[in-house]
Image 1 (cartoon, helix red, strand yellow):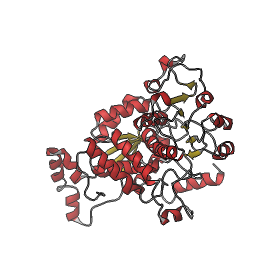
Image 2: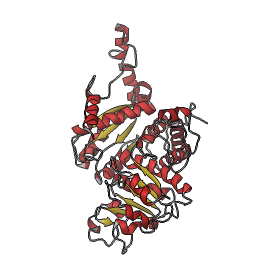
Image 3: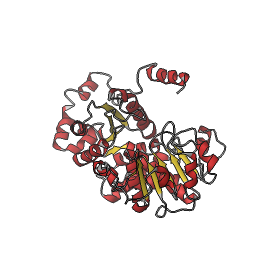
Image 4: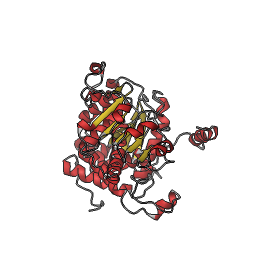
Length: 418
């Protein structure tokens, strides 16, 4: 980051008021009568109503439109274990995106605990406050244990965005890229470099969409994960889930030989340009490490003119950005009071995002991005974050899937598209 940009970022967060969030009052408090309703004695009536019928919390409090964005700061952006307090600017930023794109209110909560049990117990005890919980920047493998336990203990949606948000947006882009390259997901050989939260979730979602396990190669810092690796017994169960049989292909380069898809959710510069020549014709390369991808698009295009490329950056085409997913996924889940975010809801979000990229782009979006034209093709396989249609596209698809799968406690909203 340049010195100018660094100072601009610090000034943005400091002035005119520290931070990026505030709290707004939604009811009049103009005089004694209002005060008697807002607090004592009037507030006793909703208290008694909720005590008798807990679901009335959705009628008389902000619970139904309130999400907790929670981190323990063990995996902040690409910066690593920065601690709970240092994660707060990111959690506030996440809250801003929830409000801006889906009109969802957020409390950001930073937990000073690293042991999964402590994190789980803390979140479970405060869960009644919220309509949903978004976990963020929690390191693997603890993030898997934390999310799984909270889904079992809570009766509201719990969603680790670093896992599933990345996977959903990536999968939508992948479906469209495969079609443009004349390939099918069930036939594609996919190599994923990075076996953390995003990598594991991406491989799981690829399987849900039709990829065959024997075509998936998961690579971590020590190479291809297979069941005869020396450290296999010490690997977490999520990595072992994708361990292949013994093979002479033990490195990333070896795995890429004959591959159709490379998914990078690891670190900068890990994909060598010459390795692209090992891949099949019309390859797909998703180098999603941020801010520096596994391979820069310029370097990739110099080697392969027939590839489709995506990154996590906004200054290149095909940005895989979680903001395309999480605000609208939660919007749909909250609007039907879903108990959880299940497989069907995630797949619905994938297919809604993939379909939206095929629709004509509205003039307002072209103007926002300073482009004269934009249409479905190798440089536009996923919608842009400022696309005004995202909420009306993704949220209804998620809500419909929640109702159809039995995850919803309320019917499909009448104000949603039929």
